[in-house]
Image (tube, rainbow, N blue to C red; front, side, top):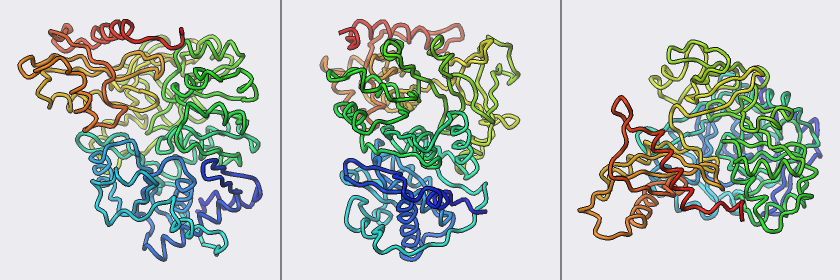
Amino acid sequence: MNLDWIKTRAIATPDKVAVIDPIKQTEFTYKQLNQRAEMLARHLVENEGIKRGDRIGTFVPNDIAIIDFLLASIKIGAVFVPLNWRLKPIEIGKVVKDAGLEYIVYATNHLERLTEVPQEFIKYNVDGPEYNEIVNLENYTPFESVNLDLQDIAMLIYTSGSTGRPKGVIHTHESYLNNSFNQNLSWGMREDWKTIASAPMFHILGFIDIVIPMLMVGGTVILERYFNHETINDWIVKYEPTVLVLIPTMFYAIIAHPEFKPENIMNIELLVSGGSPPLPAVQKVFQQMGKIIINAYGLTEAPLLTFNKYEYAVNNPQSIGQPLMFVDVKIVNEDLEEVPVGDIGEIIVKGKNITPGYWNLPEENEKAFHNGFFRTGDMGFINEFGEITIVNRLKELIITGGENVLPSEVEAILSQHPLIRSAIVLGYEHPKFGESVSAAIMLNKEALGSDNYREVLDEYCLKNLAGYKVPKLYLEIDEIPLNSVGKPDRLELEKMMNDYAKSTIINELSN
């Protein structure tokens, strides 16, 4: 089957601008985008020996090279692996080993994070002359794409890599293509749409939920290498995006900037928040300007599942909305039986856009699925209008600035430090990030030595964890409250932490 959609798009709209890179001062039409991918595919096959099924990794911020390598991978049947450049070297090394990656390209200033990766796997800098020559359009010759099966693996996207075995989420050609179909139909996406790609493209949100659907429908993507709160308003004015899909902290950054003007966003048709809903105060500011932030819900394993329609979002801004086309959602109890409307339970989902499973983790796959439904691990309820609201995360995942943090991962690192007798890691409400990481800790007073334990723990955590996983708040406690079954009472700890946070953090929106 011919699944090379960029070649077809290049025939349909050859001269339409597909990608703009303001930093590199370049732009490419759909015809040029397809030609770059064909040239790269030829190079990978003929010069690097890449064959069908091989994994190819990019350790690159938002850049045309990520798009090049995805499209080239499709043409040769390789598996694309966008690596999270925010991870620590040891975390990256685990992901590379698990994926069996032996071909990795990097970007300027990112090579230093690849110290735990075998050096023979690291190829070249995509910002350098070597890569520019590979995709030099003056040397273009056509490349014949391979036929693929819908069940062939298109990409691996990793959820974590800090402790134990990292989990590679498989997306087949069927799953990622269906995600785009569902999204384009549900959102009514058009060729004249433009977006600024600010969310990292190693994420489901930044890549599968915005860049790929926009290119598939024939829109224009403006690449923001790294999100910059100082310049985002200038970019919105200059490029006039039609749609913005951002994480909550980015929406906060737009309105918090002293030079923000409401007229900046008046031409934007669709504002979508991914990762988690923005804080009510942020939503209220946009609503006062006549703009409603729509919540979208998805996971690495299931890119886009629900979408909060405009008419519902006005009255219920915290809801994640209703299922997209061709997606089934149920709320179930502990016995995995569907519960009545209004009752809280686990959200399980089914659709062709959902992963078929984790890479080389058969036991995890057994636990993750039930009768064809994927268990999200999120707790929520459905109201009488069919709207879904998340009330808690069964897996206790913390989502901070769009990044996922597993508390047990941070707890494992903290527990190894001699200052810590016990630590419980949990999220707390943060005015900028929506949710941030904190730790309730019992200190080993004998090992303390001084009162600057926060600085000591910060330094230690930063050496062992990505920055977004490091606790931003420590609450010293004499004993950990327990619930009725003798386990740490996380609800009580969350209340204590949020009360402590309110007394120590200044809410910037109120200033």
